[in-house]
Image (cartoon, rainbow, N blue to C red):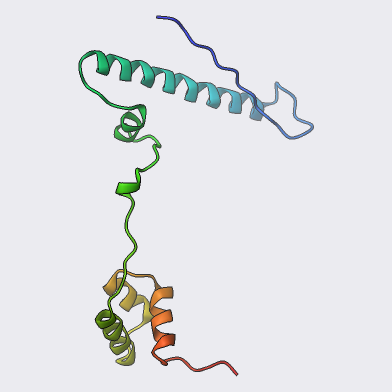
Length: 126
């Protein structure tokens, strides 16, 4: 198998020399990442040879590495219905905190406070 090479450029702040410990560590870390990716690329090719189709991103996600999430796996934004907004306002009127109501409905405290403001439950600024 042919070995591929990659150029590593480490930009360091002025005053640091190539043999400074921080530059050496950064270069070693970059080389370790390159070695890991090349090993994973070989693993993907070996899996494909066995009939298992898997991308490098999928392999990284299974190994606990950092792979970008696909748009389908991202969580969707919670949209409250008008009835739910009325329930939020009623809970706030009965004395519940914004954080407790936010947890109950699965939204942020900012959303609860926006509903509180639109329901007229806050004092206007002077």
